[in-house]
Image 1: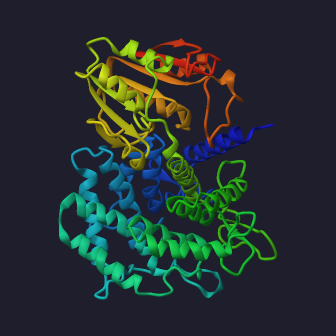
Image 2 (image 1 turned 120 degrees about the vertical axis):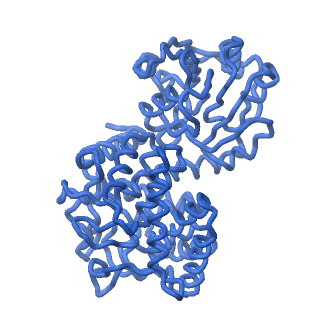
Image 3 (image 1 turned 90 degrees about the horizontal axis):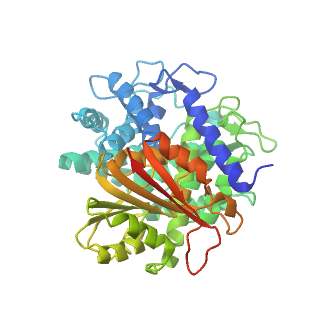
Length: 501
């Protein structure tokens, strides 16, 4: 019998295994389980930012390199098993290439150059009135006489903005504004008149481009359709649900800070997960027969499940940020073990990873004013609480925004427990740590589990198990157990001290 936390972590692990199984020849993700050898370029593209968020940079690079190899001379990309280019598909691939550039994974500007070509193709498909067309609409038909809404192209605008920022060329921002002027003038833009999956594309696209008020109004409408069990129907007037639409609505609610509604949709969709780790496109709930990939496990369901996990964690973290402590007692055992290990003069460049309000750095900087401290946290919002003369960057333990071997010393206090994928987290820590550098991880002992309520996806650690993971990443590790904290010594906290050899 699994606990709630173990069950959620199991779902995450199953989803990861599905990605590995349906990655075709290390090149891209398959369309769905019934087409296991057919790569879907569009979905491969927008998987890349998700893979990077969860630490799988190698797979992200494999996907990116494959997409470069199949880009058309005009900058576009085609639909699966087709010679027909699609504007939307091109935009989704741009999301992936932009993520590779932003995360310093671009070698010789190859992704940047392909990104610019792709953006220019989308601009070439923009009509005089600002709307964005596609070369072919033959695959856009839906049941009930409906069609995929052209307004889905709003979801392509965010990567074009990134091209504008990379190049400084005004034509991209002008194109975005023309598109928004056209689409925002449509009073029915976000009405729930299409499949939830496509409706959510439009709404998340509005959020990502900064049109928060319009997106909020759209999600307020979706709230009227949400049932008490958290579900939202695939269409406004049917009884079956679309798995990916539910995850996408959850993402939109998380991004808007409406955690209860998001959680309800997320939890409902999670329970539909198949034993393989993926989801069918739709599931019958009542009298209506499901008709969106009802027997096909679609690749994009896993992508949006992972995104919902990420944005859910972020929203809940930011919701409680105001209660985080901003100071640490100099006699606290957690602080003392970092200070003791940091005193060596050879440790000059220091990273507070998962820093929160940087309470450890505040005191350590007073103790060691000549050392260069830097702070990384999951949330830009939380970083605003830090009133210190240090470099601050948004990032995570799974995606540290620094080059290889940047730091002599890293400390991570009560943050690894939230990293979800601990294997990738330790690899990422080792990546940015210099040879002979040291890392101190302070976190909770698995044997004390039950002493506190666990947050979603939180994990506590077995001394030997975490040590083994660290040693596999060339971190010679020792463990100091039962640290004293807040005048208590109850076995809750351990320190794992690793030296890169």
